Length: 449
Ligand code: ADP
Image (cartoon, rainbow, N blue to C red; front, side, top):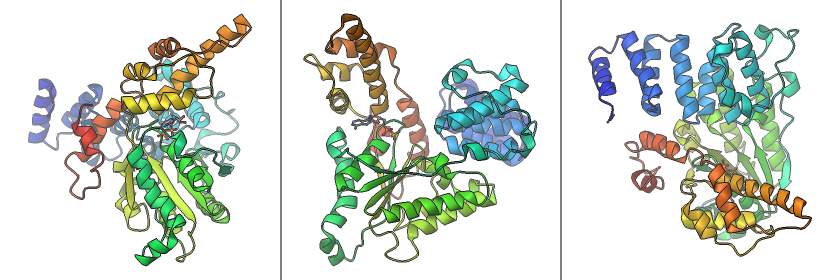
């Protein structure tokens, strides 16, 4: 129910004349402007049905996606426009935000500079400050010849094998999550007879989901260390090479790399980019890539993926196609929650453990960092360390860090969008939990947040 009476009236009017495009468009834009992101998304989608190729409506939908951290979904709606020369500059800026959200600073920078050079009014100084990319490529490479995202120069070089030194002892809190990973990942390897007796084979993947920065990657890396397994971390940029054909090659090579290094934890970050509901994917080759991903997960035969544990992470689990969740694929969903006060204190303790410290009151810091996730706390500690380092250099001796230093750093570090994430999650799953898939998330979206 919308609290805003004006919006409520607009929505009622749109309900009464569902084919009135200007009205629906206006409603969608108002919803977006007031931050009702999931509602705005639904309205823009409805408006797109009436006017399928409308660039403003598409840009609105992409913005709704970006603001919900659904970066890959944003890119997939922008993609057909971005491939055309002279596309609306606003779309370039949105693509830059989405690419940056996916950690692809280089391509984000190119998109941003290109868009602003055509229309300075779309400049976004805050975004520009986060982009450290070089200016766009020289005009020798005409825009219309460029593929949607990748160029040969920034094509992915492929994933690498890590040996993780971290174990579950390095992951604070999350006892329930660790326990469920232990059962899923570790016991089948440690006690294969027991599993065989029940006719279960090791294998099948786990999909970790939760707000950005809550520790999904950290947890996956620690699971590999706990198991003594190799760790292959595949970012989206490693795979989503928009040259037809080479993404498939990258994907095959990545699975083969993991298979050659068994036992191995193969981790796919931002898997929603691959798994966004397949009907949303306009490009045939993107669908093909998804199908190949599923085929690799299934393995050509029973033993193909033996010893390869596939973990994936997403901030937007509701975009994942049900085909990904079939038995033997990502058949287990695990929620990685934002940390409560006790978990925040434990994370701070881990983050500070190898630094020179005075006597610390981590609970006091945990108390003032409501809504901070692990990544925010890491930012906070890094900031405090920087200040301390400066002081130590001036003093010519190491000065131990104090609780006060952390409290001071907390003043300057804002929490990322956990609240916004939970509000979005709420919109998606509150009335869509018939299968019980979101049971773990329910207490959070119904609770104090
Ligand atoms: P996500 O993959 O969910 O976006 P990350 O795993 O990248 O988040 O978390 C960011 C950083 O926060 C990690 O590198 C780690 O230093 C810290 N962190 C997050 N959760 C924890 C935790 N439970 N215990 C210790 N450190 C954590």
